[in-house]
Length: 483
Image 1: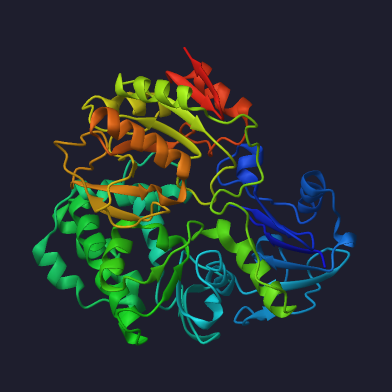
Image 2: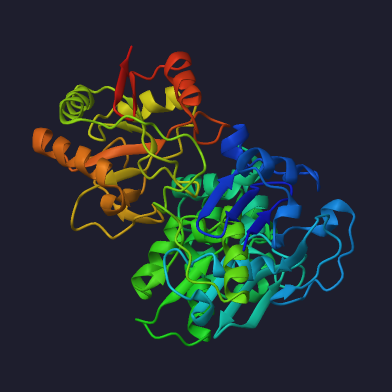
């Protein structure tokens, strides 16, 4: 049986293909090197999958699609559907098509990190899913509650809109993530904090209404106070659906990329499962899981997850001698690009498409910002072998980092979005060798790209960064290139 799952629309298109034996995954932004690339044409997707995997829709048994029909002037009937619309006729394909509920696809996309997510309690919170759905709660494979964009508001959408009040200088789709960094520069307004405690998940649009604060004329304090309060709202929603403190919980949607909020949830619910592809780039994986369940197929295996992009993997392997040289280079304050295996799924660099540097160097943040054309207020992530760090295999949590010890990665609030390296043996080995030489158990780790571009996906992309920007070196598989 050959199956294809698609997320197309205006941003973050991604495809998952099952050829009867194995799964393959592609996020189109990596292929075309266009950040948040979206397949806008309802027919273009077929040319992409033919080029990538040599198939057309006539070769498939079924397609599962997650998309926004109103973007294509198609009918918006049955927008409250769950879990799927079978025999969906509005999508052009020469095989059967099933349209899967957007939020349900998010929920099911947790399958690479937890078995049978459909049987687990799940929360999905994003900008909006199908039409006006801004959040959903799933329990025992049933939709038990959903939020409405118009009636209740949306955390994801409100963070995006709030970003327009600040000089973020980024793609609007990155507003929420950039604002997560910038809000740390404000102060919590105690009086305003007491006022907004009247709001919850059912009136988020009122929470973010700037008219409550405009008289004080300090937008940074406004967003800092709201950002500080949002975890209380999330915990209220979680507790309302009755999980025990040790019960497994699936959490996904674009809002689940907020590491500050995630860290509060993690402390209260240690068995929370958040996939690295929590945003829309996981939707095709969730839609494919819907087809697997529907056709009663064995559990899928996504090879080398989370390093499963259909991109270029080096053929050469890093040897000990080269490893030692790289450790020496990093300890000398050099900045290197690090390209290994296949690219990671999700927006965070987990050590296969990374820029690495010494986090102890007080000038390193400025240096890497110059390489990436990054604004100074945005912090860098880190990869660490520290056994005491909160487990964060997908860089989805924040930990306290002493700014006097790690000035290049500690944010203004002395936290860092960190990655624990248990899921990347080669990076783990590199940092272990670095620790043996320097006593430092951490490296600055940011994505191997420059501002406005996605993570690189082939040698040519990486080589361009080395040659066109002030990067000191590039490690591509087992090859080391130095300037």
